Amino acid sequence: MPVEWRFTPDDVARLRFAFSPMWELVASLRVLRAPGRHSLHLPWLRAVRPRLREVDLTDLFALVPVRGYVPDFLTPPPDTPLPDFAAELERVRATPPTTAYEEMVWVQTSDPAALRRFADDPAEGVRRVTDQLRAYWTVAIEEFWPRIRALLEGDVMWRTRMLAAGGVRELFADLHSTVAWHGDRLVAAKNCDYEGDLGGDGLVLVPSAFSWPDVWVMYEPYLPMLCYPARGVGTLWTDGTPPCTPEALAALIGRTRAQVLTALAEPGSTSGLARRLGLTPGAVSQHLAVLSDAGLVARRRLGREVLYRRTPVGESLAAVS
Image (tube, rainbow, N blue to C red; front, side, top):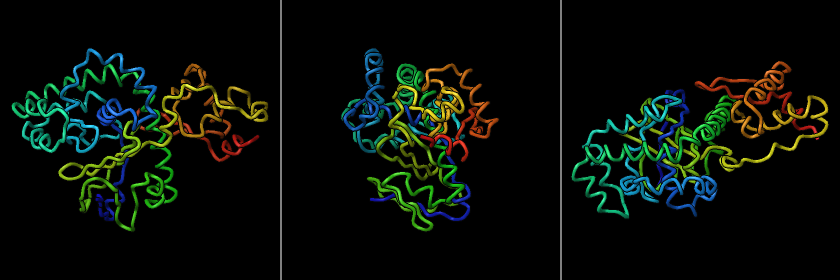
């Protein structure tokens, strides 16, 4: 059963990217409960499971089943490109009890007693859920958010370049195997049947780490949104060693600078590169400045972050063997 959105020229023009700490938080609950389907995240699971023994997640587990519908009020569409967790938490807290109840009744849960308690007093249920979301964020996600955010920023930079170079068809060509572009329509294979016009609101594309390997969708009465696995998610938890550096490139520009250039196979931030290479952010920043002055890397601001990518000349040098 597909979800099908019809685009007008205005909708194509309003196609935009954002990402959401709340979406990552909610998606990670499924990873926590079904690790066999999300083997990429086993290093994260090993790190956080011991911390969760004293955290009450009863209502969250009831509302977020391993498969099937999740109440939309838990995952409001991002209203800015770079929302922070505190702002998104307040949006969940402000959910009208009637909305929470109407969405809750669609959940197929393994804990019907918890849902009955929620239904008896939806306002109190929303308060409990908000408290549990905050506690879970603090214990399981907050420490890792800079790493996750760097991955999502890299995906957004990559795909905006694809959109600029090849248009909408090129953008959706490799977004996900279940997503396809057909002229003026975007079709996503999901366990729900929906067809409608975007109506000039456009579509929000949300890269995600914890949604892998699935896509999530949202449609009316909410802002239309498609959440998809971020590019490079398989490397998210790899502490790794510095990438192999061709000897000729190292001799030309210096070994550390060559490592930085080689590491930019995907766009990255100063902090992300520092973590991968085991260097200080200050050292990475100095090397990036030199590479930028030499025309080997280019920079682009994305919200509060600056991402770096290789220029065509930098790509050529990095290919030296």
